[in-house]
Length: 225
Ligand code: ADP
Ligand code: ADP
Image 1 (cartoon, rainbow, N blue to C red):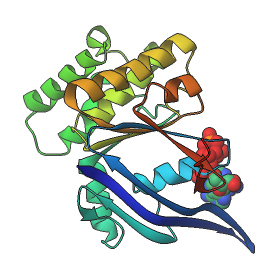
Image 2 (image 1 turned 90 degrees about the vertical axis):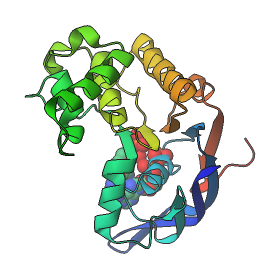
Image 3 (image 1 turned 180 degrees about the vertical axis):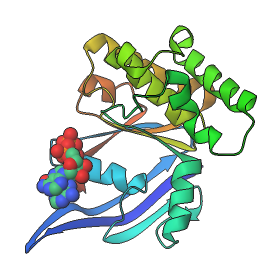
Image 4 (image 1 turned 180 degrees about the horizontal axis):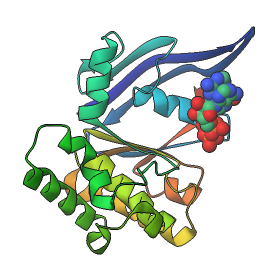
């Protein structure tokens, strides 16, 4: 079953009179339960592509369908609802709130859904346990290593059970051991709960752990790879 379908995507950035064709004409289908890596040189359009798929930006032309929903020709309010309820994000910077403990950072979004405290605490505890941080739940971000902070941000992205997890260079700031932990966690969630994952990476060995690599070059799919 196709979960993401993009057709003839184009994204042009206009900076004054200068136009950059970051995405020229990209069509892709991603299956539910797939773990996909997007790779290519710096400036090839990887982040721009991920931002379109994750509804963080709008294409200049083209269509995007997620789980059968047209997510382009809908209101901003609907797009925001979709982002919050259906999608999860992990970035290279962990973006944790420094004044909140690990568990508080994770339950921020379920808390906003009018659940009882016991319920959202339990959800956060379960997912923090799944990322190997059961004994660090009450620590603040400043008391955690980079790898542990990234695992908190993965827990936060997954606590709402998103249809798709988007990760933009999630290991860029990590040492090789923590990087491996992050990719292994993605692999685990992909295998065990069928989590669909779309990840941008520079690292060939990380891309090779995905089910498929989508190569991008100069705003187009690189079909020579
Ligand atoms: P990476 O190569 O690690 O993906 P980039 O430097 O390409 O990182 O981009 C990081 C973010 O900065 C992009 O997602 C984009 O929003 C913004 N960005 C990149 N290039 C430009 C640019 N020329 N002008 C303005 N913003 C840019
Ligand atoms: P990658 O992630 O592969 O490094 P990006 O998607 O960040 O590539 O960038 C693709 C192209 O678009 C680059 O030429 C970059 O400079 C440009 N770009 C990215 N974001 C912006 C932006 N916000 N404004 C202007 N140009 C941008």
